[in-house]
Length: 77
Image 1 (tube, rainbow, N blue to C red):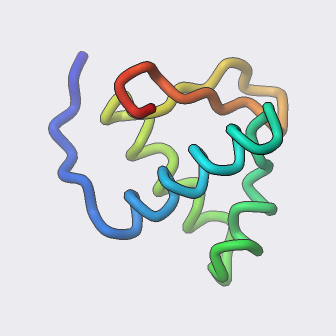
Image 2 (cartoon, rainbow, N blue to C red):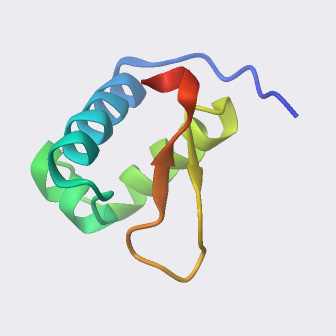
């Protein structure tokens, strides 16, 4: 199911951060790491943005019970 959520500047910022982090570290960052590095006050803000990116098909979660569970989909590379 494709969700037509428009890409916002904040979503683009998180996606760019994920691309760079995963390329450099060969693993995804934690929600807390994204929050701190991007200067957000709450980890929930990052969770909401990531859920929107998942809805758009830009990233996917590989496990619910893991802290580093994000992978880039082929279209977002």
